[in-house]
Image (cartoon, rainbow, N blue to C red; front, side, top):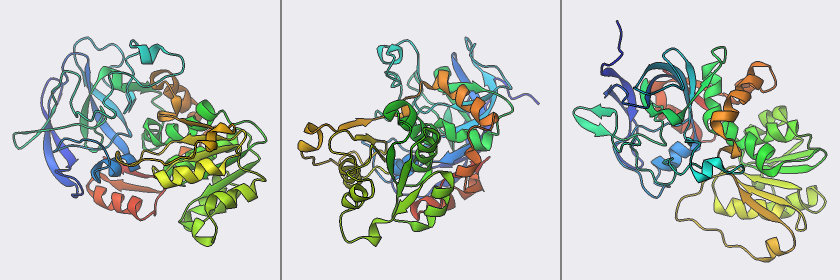
Length: 376
């Protein structure tokens, strides 16, 4: 029986306040309006940014809300005026959509669209409404996507068609974690062959950065994490050495400086901790090191920095979504996955059904997962 043009009732993980557990609810998902797409979500990664939002780390968040922003699925129906995709297409959802018309989208070195909801956290479609409701009450969406649900509705610019042969339970990671880590190494830092790299934080983003350092031909790749159980996987993916700060009496940046003979050529912070960011910066070479901030810290946190850290020649830069222009670049990434050039399955440590979302977050909080994927 066709669901086109009809309200769909389905399961979703809804959260009703900061630091509260997810509640499995039956929600109603309205049909897409003009220039909107309704998607059957098949898989969604659990990203630290979801927990960051849940813990109160974002400047604002409207409740109730359906979190999740790293998803892949199949187009169920489209609204009037949609030409980008059609029912049956396989897609990756874009948590940082691009209209490809604004000044930021058209700039060759930017991918941060003026119309996206990142940082604003309004939690509504472009028309300032939502397609989600539960028991007669409106539910907000998250980062233009909301993937912790069996069905979602997104604006057309928040979707990217992909090859139907791509495994959705793997390529969902391209929607955020993988592209963020991998792209920052390739597109932002532009790591050179024979160089030294240090990656702070060996979660999904950090492991993706490690993979990219290896692909770039880095000679020395040091992984830093306070959870040593992650080291075997990190070495499998490309780390030449791993360091646990708890095993050393001196500051970790001094340890890295000694290991690299004066500081790493490139550093990457993949956690979202301002103290770790400071350590990462100081771990890079004082004269020419490239320090790259990837993790998103709580909105009130600040770095205290000595100007001499940069006056001697270091560069500090940040990147969002690995500086990929998602509509153009994500299909190319997925082509590389299908060609065997990128092994996304190596990043998926757990697969859980949607109704075990709380267990999935426990895995993240206790450092027991690289990436957990929820299956709908």
